Image (cartoon, rainbow, N blue to C red):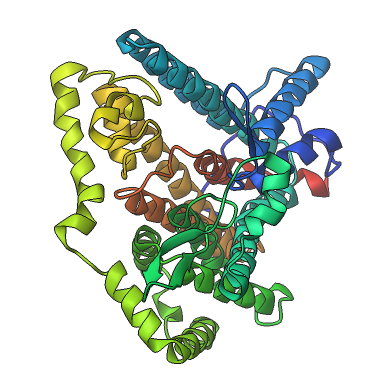
Length: 459
């Protein structure tokens, strides 16, 4: 094997789940991280994922103190360094706040930031001390949570199409007390509503962008599985279903990300492009879509025309927000207007107190300036670098016919494609500030940490 494992200053234990409560909270947080609708309004919006994360971090710190264990892997130390660097940028940005509303939004943003980056550091540290199979449990929880969103979205769509009612009003509102609903894109002929499922994410574009992650992460793993493997057929069905839900969201940003991510995978997996493992699920999706469109051809023709409209009125919400960036360069170029403060300062333009820019990059420049944006670029490059290391490990495993070879390298390629897809999708939308992205980052950078060492579960 040409690639040497990175030495880690960790102590491992032979048991798969040494701390059931800690591990359970970790997996539960990952599972519900995309369930944005499950939240309550107090002084700030508090989601189920936030509650579980806070509990996880408390138990994690308690466990480390109880055992007198302060050891961190090098990857965890780097993640902690990013935590400190972002915190410094946001604290400096605090001095650019000048209204009570701005301070309130800043406080909400800081609370989310501490939870998200805290989970990144603690999550990588936890994964480094668990058996290989625990990482797969975590990945299954992450992809499974997004898939559950897809399942809910399909049922949500069916209920609205068949009855005109709202599944959210029956299942979500009694739990949260918040009024949520399926997205209504428009009305055809004055009576026929066009529904776009948003699942538990709150927005069909959020669902569409998040669905690209399991689609791209699981596809290379599926392609490399042996034909007799019990997961082969199950993954094919799951991937076909997720693609159907992706199309049902009518999310242009989601499809843009999926297309760019697919191009990334097409390079290392080009020999699979004409194989039945890939063609059969795609053919099944095509048949289902063709059947649905044939039954309601005029309806879908009108919807397709609306979603491919490139007029100025349709494009202005996505391109117009970029005009805000030069304004920031004239006022607070280095550290921006303050964390979570885009809506506060541009309410006079947008007319909405809760408006987020239709671009993550606009949000980054406006709220954290040149310094914060440059820091985030370095953060993303670090994730790419760790995935590059993971791909090298996978290639080395393949060279010696290690059983991990057909698992780790496809996983690393899938994560790479998913990251590229997310970056592309966020040109015209805003999801990289959401919690799911930091969970994804933790799973991505942890790959070489987890698989570069002997499996403690087999000790």
